[in-house]
Length: 247
Image 1 (cartoon, rainbow, N blue to C red):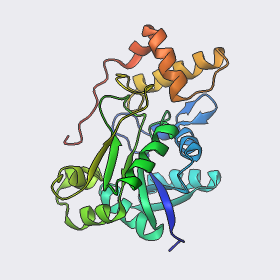
Image 2 (image 1 turned 180 degrees about the vertical axis):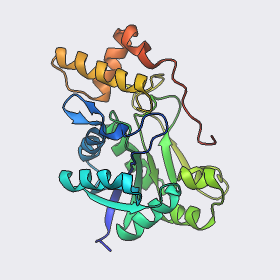
Image 3 (image 1 turned 120 degrees about the vertical axis):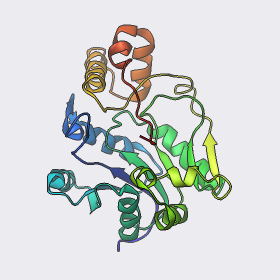
Image 4 (image 1 turned 90 degrees about the horizontal axis):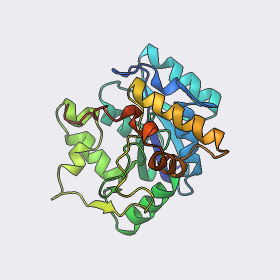
Protein backbone atom coordinates (compact mmCIF):
# COMPACT_ATOMS: atom_id res chain seq x y z
CA UNK A 1 0.00 0.00 0.00
CA UNK A 2 1.22 3.48 -0.89
CA UNK A 3 1.06 6.47 1.45
CA UNK A 4 -2.34 8.16 1.63
CA UNK A 5 -2.91 11.34 -0.38
CA UNK A 6 -5.67 13.91 -0.24
CA UNK A 7 -6.79 13.72 -3.88
CA UNK A 8 -6.17 10.76 -6.19
CA UNK A 9 -7.07 10.77 -9.88
CA UNK A 10 -7.72 7.33 -11.36
CA UNK A 11 -7.74 7.13 -15.16
CA UNK A 12 -9.58 4.12 -16.52
CA UNK A 13 -7.89 3.10 -19.76
CA UNK A 14 -7.84 0.01 -21.93
CA UNK A 15 -7.10 -0.84 -25.55
CA UNK A 16 -10.24 -2.83 -26.40
CA UNK A 17 -12.64 0.01 -27.23
CA UNK A 18 -15.57 -1.38 -29.24
CA UNK A 19 -15.86 1.58 -31.61
CA UNK A 20 -12.22 2.70 -31.89
CA UNK A 21 -9.69 0.09 -30.67
CA UNK A 22 -6.46 1.42 -29.13
CA UNK A 23 -7.85 4.94 -29.32
CA UNK A 24 -5.89 5.95 -26.21
CA UNK A 25 -2.67 5.70 -28.23
CA UNK A 26 -3.92 7.63 -31.26
CA UNK A 27 -1.80 10.77 -31.79
CA UNK A 28 -3.32 14.22 -31.53
CA UNK A 29 -0.57 16.64 -32.48
CA UNK A 30 2.44 16.06 -30.27
CA UNK A 31 0.93 13.52 -27.86
CA UNK A 32 -1.16 10.35 -27.82
CA UNK A 33 -4.68 10.77 -26.49
CA UNK A 34 -3.81 9.28 -23.09
CA UNK A 35 -0.82 11.60 -22.86
CA UNK A 36 -3.14 14.59 -23.11
CA UNK A 37 -5.31 13.23 -20.29
CA UNK A 38 -2.21 12.91 -18.10
CA UNK A 39 -1.26 16.49 -18.91
CA UNK A 40 -4.72 17.80 -17.97
CA UNK A 41 -4.61 16.07 -14.61
CA UNK A 42 -1.08 17.33 -13.98
CA UNK A 43 -2.42 20.85 -14.58
CA UNK A 44 -5.09 20.41 -11.88
CA UNK A 45 -3.60 22.00 -8.77
CA UNK A 46 -5.63 19.90 -6.32
CA UNK A 47 -4.66 16.49 -7.73
CA UNK A 48 -1.78 14.94 -5.78
CA UNK A 49 -1.41 11.55 -7.45
CA UNK A 50 -2.45 10.06 -10.79
CA UNK A 51 -2.83 6.32 -11.39
CA UNK A 52 -3.73 4.61 -14.66
CA UNK A 53 -6.11 1.70 -13.99
CA UNK A 54 -6.12 -0.84 -16.79
CA UNK A 55 -7.01 -4.51 -17.14
CA UNK A 56 -4.98 -7.66 -16.49
CA UNK A 57 -5.59 -8.85 -20.06
CA UNK A 58 -2.47 -9.32 -22.24
CA UNK A 59 -3.68 -6.77 -24.80
CA UNK A 60 -3.40 -4.12 -22.09
CA UNK A 61 0.30 -4.78 -21.49
CA UNK A 62 0.73 -1.78 -23.79
CA UNK A 63 -1.02 0.42 -21.23
CA UNK A 64 1.34 -0.71 -18.49
CA UNK A 65 4.32 -0.01 -20.76
CA UNK A 66 2.95 3.45 -21.52
CA UNK A 67 2.57 4.19 -17.80
CA UNK A 68 6.10 3.00 -17.04
CA UNK A 69 7.58 5.07 -19.86
CA UNK A 70 5.58 8.12 -18.76
CA UNK A 71 6.67 7.71 -15.13
CA UNK A 72 3.08 7.26 -13.97
CA UNK A 73 1.86 4.71 -11.44
CA UNK A 74 -0.57 2.05 -12.63
CA UNK A 75 -2.86 -0.70 -11.39
CA UNK A 76 -4.22 -3.71 -13.27
CA UNK A 77 -7.56 -5.33 -12.48
CA UNK A 78 -10.70 -6.75 -14.04
CA UNK A 79 -11.44 -5.72 -17.63
CA UNK A 80 -15.24 -5.72 -17.32
CA UNK A 81 -15.74 -5.04 -13.58
CA UNK A 82 -14.39 -1.50 -13.72
CA UNK A 83 -15.97 -0.68 -10.35
CA UNK A 84 -13.92 -3.51 -8.85
CA UNK A 85 -10.82 -2.24 -10.65
CA UNK A 86 -11.32 1.20 -9.08
CA UNK A 87 -11.97 -0.20 -5.60
CA UNK A 88 -8.82 -2.31 -5.72
CA UNK A 89 -6.81 0.62 -7.09
CA UNK A 90 -8.00 2.59 -4.06
CA UNK A 91 -6.85 -0.21 -1.74
CA UNK A 92 -3.33 0.09 -3.18
CA UNK A 93 -3.34 3.89 -3.51
CA UNK A 94 -5.44 5.24 -0.61
CA UNK A 95 -6.87 8.75 -0.74
CA UNK A 96 -9.40 11.02 0.92
CA UNK A 97 -10.99 12.00 -2.40
CA UNK A 98 -11.06 10.26 -5.79
CA UNK A 99 -11.30 11.64 -9.30
CA UNK A 100 -12.75 9.24 -11.85
CA UNK A 101 -11.27 10.20 -15.21
CA UNK A 102 -11.31 8.33 -18.51
CA UNK A 103 -8.50 7.90 -21.00
CA UNK A 104 -10.47 9.32 -23.92
CA UNK A 105 -10.96 12.94 -22.85
CA UNK A 106 -7.96 14.97 -24.08
CA UNK A 107 -9.71 18.30 -23.40
CA UNK A 108 -10.58 17.64 -19.77
CA UNK A 109 -10.66 21.02 -18.01
CA UNK A 110 -8.28 21.19 -15.01
CA UNK A 111 -9.71 24.49 -13.78
CA UNK A 112 -13.23 23.12 -13.54
CA UNK A 113 -11.87 19.99 -11.88
CA UNK A 114 -10.11 22.01 -9.17
CA UNK A 115 -13.34 23.91 -8.52
CA UNK A 116 -15.29 20.64 -8.28
CA UNK A 117 -12.79 19.20 -5.81
CA UNK A 118 -13.05 22.28 -3.58
CA UNK A 119 -16.86 22.18 -3.60
CA UNK A 120 -16.94 18.42 -3.06
CA UNK A 121 -14.78 18.68 0.04
CA UNK A 122 -16.51 21.80 1.35
CA UNK A 123 -19.93 20.16 1.07
CA UNK A 124 -18.78 16.76 2.35
CA UNK A 125 -20.30 15.21 -0.78
CA UNK A 126 -20.19 11.60 -1.96
CA UNK A 127 -20.40 12.31 -5.70
CA UNK A 128 -19.83 15.59 -7.53
CA UNK A 129 -20.37 16.58 -11.17
CA UNK A 130 -20.98 19.80 -13.07
CA UNK A 131 -24.60 20.85 -13.49
CA UNK A 132 -26.47 21.54 -16.71
CA UNK A 133 -25.11 21.11 -20.22
CA UNK A 134 -21.34 21.17 -20.68
CA UNK A 135 -19.23 19.66 -23.48
CA UNK A 136 -19.06 15.88 -23.28
CA UNK A 137 -15.51 15.02 -22.26
CA UNK A 138 -14.67 18.32 -20.61
CA UNK A 139 -15.12 17.13 -17.05
CA UNK A 140 -14.75 14.20 -14.64
CA UNK A 141 -16.41 12.90 -11.47
CA UNK A 142 -15.32 13.50 -7.88
CA UNK A 143 -16.12 10.58 -5.57
CA UNK A 144 -15.85 9.84 -1.86
CA UNK A 145 -13.86 6.63 -1.19
CA UNK A 146 -16.43 5.31 1.29
CA UNK A 147 -19.19 5.70 -1.29
CA UNK A 148 -17.06 3.88 -3.86
CA UNK A 149 -16.34 1.08 -1.40
CA UNK A 150 -20.05 0.74 -0.61
CA UNK A 151 -20.87 0.57 -4.32
CA UNK A 152 -18.21 -2.10 -4.81
CA UNK A 153 -19.64 -4.21 -1.99
CA UNK A 154 -23.30 -3.88 -2.96
CA UNK A 155 -23.72 -3.13 -6.66
CA UNK A 156 -25.10 -6.02 -8.72
CA UNK A 157 -25.36 -6.32 -12.46
CA UNK A 158 -23.13 -5.50 -15.40
CA UNK A 159 -24.38 -1.92 -15.83
CA UNK A 160 -23.41 -0.95 -12.30
CA UNK A 161 -20.08 -2.78 -12.34
CA UNK A 162 -18.86 -1.54 -15.72
CA UNK A 163 -19.51 2.17 -15.22
CA UNK A 164 -18.22 2.67 -11.63
CA UNK A 165 -20.55 5.38 -10.27
CA UNK A 166 -24.19 4.62 -11.36
CA UNK A 167 -24.89 2.77 -8.10
CA UNK A 168 -23.98 5.94 -6.22
CA UNK A 169 -25.95 8.48 -8.24
CA UNK A 170 -28.91 6.09 -8.53
CA UNK A 171 -29.38 6.26 -4.74
CA UNK A 172 -29.82 9.96 -3.87
CA UNK A 173 -31.62 8.96 -0.69
CA UNK A 174 -28.42 7.38 0.57
CA UNK A 175 -25.53 9.32 -0.93
CA UNK A 176 -24.84 13.06 -0.89
CA UNK A 177 -24.98 14.07 -4.56
CA UNK A 178 -23.66 17.48 -5.56
CA UNK A 179 -23.95 19.39 -8.82
CA UNK A 180 -21.61 22.36 -9.20
CA UNK A 181 -22.30 25.34 -11.47
CA UNK A 182 -19.82 25.11 -14.36
CA UNK A 183 -17.46 27.91 -15.41
CA UNK A 184 -19.06 30.28 -17.91
CA UNK A 185 -16.87 29.06 -20.78
CA UNK A 186 -18.28 25.51 -20.39
CA UNK A 187 -21.90 26.33 -19.59
CA UNK A 188 -24.50 25.51 -22.25
CA UNK A 189 -21.87 24.40 -24.76
CA UNK A 190 -23.24 21.44 -26.70
CA UNK A 191 -19.99 20.05 -28.10
CA UNK A 192 -18.70 16.49 -28.08
CA UNK A 193 -15.08 16.61 -26.86
CA UNK A 194 -14.53 12.95 -26.11
CA UNK A 195 -12.98 10.37 -28.45
CA UNK A 196 -14.98 7.23 -29.15
CA UNK A 197 -15.14 7.15 -32.97
CA UNK A 198 -13.11 8.08 -36.04
CA UNK A 199 -15.20 11.26 -36.34
CA UNK A 200 -14.35 12.25 -32.77
CA UNK A 201 -10.66 11.70 -33.45
CA UNK A 202 -10.88 13.73 -36.67
CA UNK A 203 -12.43 16.60 -34.71
CA UNK A 204 -9.64 16.59 -32.14
CA UNK A 205 -6.99 16.60 -34.83
CA UNK A 206 -8.74 19.43 -36.67
CA UNK A 207 -8.94 21.47 -33.45
CA UNK A 208 -5.26 20.84 -32.70
CA UNK A 209 -4.21 21.77 -36.24
CA UNK A 210 -6.23 25.00 -36.35
CA UNK A 211 -5.10 26.09 -32.88
CA UNK A 212 -1.51 25.36 -33.88
CA UNK A 213 -1.97 27.60 -36.95
CA UNK A 214 -3.22 30.35 -34.62
CA UNK A 215 -0.31 29.88 -32.23
CA UNK A 216 -2.64 28.79 -29.43
CA UNK A 217 -2.28 25.80 -27.11
CA UNK A 218 -4.58 22.79 -27.41
CA UNK A 219 -6.93 23.17 -24.43
CA UNK A 220 -10.65 23.28 -23.79
CA UNK A 221 -10.98 27.08 -23.57
CA UNK A 222 -9.32 27.61 -26.94
CA UNK A 223 -11.17 24.65 -28.45
CA UNK A 224 -14.58 26.03 -27.47
CA UNK A 225 -13.72 29.47 -28.82
CA UNK A 226 -12.67 27.84 -32.11
CA UNK A 227 -15.83 25.74 -32.38
CA UNK A 228 -18.02 28.75 -31.60
CA UNK A 229 -16.39 30.60 -34.50
CA UNK A 230 -16.10 27.71 -36.98
CA UNK A 231 -19.31 25.64 -37.39
CA UNK A 232 -17.70 23.52 -40.13
CA UNK A 233 -15.17 22.15 -37.66
CA UNK A 234 -17.85 21.69 -35.00
CA UNK A 235 -19.91 19.65 -37.48
CA UNK A 236 -17.22 16.97 -37.93
CA UNK A 237 -18.67 14.73 -35.19
CA UNK A 238 -22.14 16.21 -34.77
CA UNK A 239 -23.83 12.95 -35.83
CA UNK A 240 -22.03 10.73 -33.32
CA UNK A 241 -24.43 9.39 -30.72
CA UNK A 242 -23.27 9.32 -27.11
CA UNK A 243 -23.71 5.89 -25.55
CA UNK A 244 -25.85 5.78 -22.41
CA UNK A 245 -24.37 4.00 -19.38
CA UNK A 246 -27.37 1.66 -19.41
CA UNK A 247 -26.38 0.28 -22.83
